[in-house]
Length: 636
Ligand code: GLA
Image (tube, rainbow, N blue to C red; front, side, top):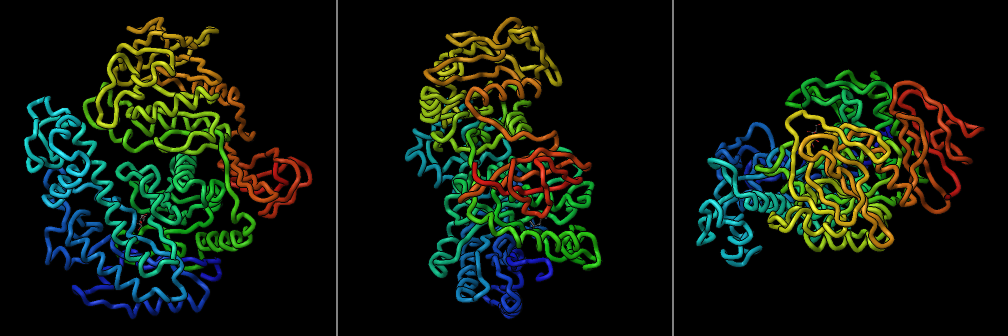
């Protein structure tokens, strides 16, 4: 570990069965030994609370702690994470373990941070058992007060679903046909909150016994089941597990998007890349290795987008168990291996980058992103299954990434004031309050872009009546009369005012102009000649609307123009080179990341040195295949 500059280790993540081999009997001597050993050698510990996978005895004595799927299938021990998050029995046992651990190690000099549970919801994010049903009813009572309010919110007048008592309500278990959509939405909210309660229970004990020790739980990027906005404000540092796929030529775009989300979740504070693989994983169908230098490049990508630490799963590749073919920092072959050499080189190099501590990134562009809207958008019985939240999100993000325009994510109730450009890709569910705050921000001078099927429903998934999109008709200067989704795989075309033609997919609609101008119109079908893309001037700002999913080249033109209008510029770089900046004190640190496997020549910011050692006398520098440079310059 010293050879590789390792200074923080996550420990004990799946060790419950070793820490408590029999109910109430704790066995810490092995952990004492490892903690002491690490401390003696200058390595700190991110100590796991180990509650993510109960020992087999818990299910043996308390089978009711096992989770149940919507179909009524029980999930048994033998894998991991086999617990019902609402189970009081599971929770009591978890809390007892955490209290014992925290009492034992509160004063241990190696303890630097708590790692609460692990990847909440990774395998079991929703449980439909009777215990969960009772907890769901409690959650609903709290939200609605009485059953009439629930009936109103759920629209139970439809299909004879009216409840006369909370006792009649269940989770949306497998039903003959589509479940009530608001019931489904509330169950997603409840399930995220049920996991959050587990986190809170552990957190309370750790705060009580070790008030000065920071705590985190590892997130998984755009992980649908858990509303990370709610979680992030309850932890001291955001940490993230990310496994880019070397087989995906666009993997770094999705990675950048999740890193920007992590930075945004923490309000711009540094975050931690808690897990990545030193090479391959074991859980894809084909587990490709990272070619030489790609692990280093991808590690720096996290640092460039705000991470102050880079960690790995896992230290040593195991010889047994379900993850024995997952890469480790020390492979099965030991230290005479390429993977080890690259890991050790990276560790040595990162140790020299202390100057980056305390530096931050800033962005003029915000993307509105809301888990509630994502959940509601992707419940069943919509006009088209092709409208997927992440696909739409990526169609915007991809353009900004390629233009090296810094982006933050903002929650539906977040502060928009720092941003000159605000984007809301398919924000299906928008409260009147969110819609109004966006409109006010545009009136005060911001540029705004949104797409079809946005601001269609309120928090209860009820449609805003009187023409779509209810609360944004004035802002956008349009009214949508009818959705006209495309058949599967169909491509239409749109024509811009100057005659240029682009493909479009997924969706069209009948848009009437109410003050906006048409920037492009549909060329065929029911919507022929009607507006496909519009622009509306509002006070000092402007609001753009996409009534379809245009080709990426159109998205690039449109968002490029909007950014220019808003006075937002990206960093220039050749294709395949990502540029991102962190700033602090007197310096800017500009990262150049070559995602191609061939060398490129880059024109870099003037002045300053490459922190990674490349000497450049002119403003041109060469980045090798998967090469990285971090240029320090006087702050702009
Ligand atoms: C997750 C888990 C780890 C391990 C890795 C494998 O991130 O937290 O325990 O299973 O996946 O990639």
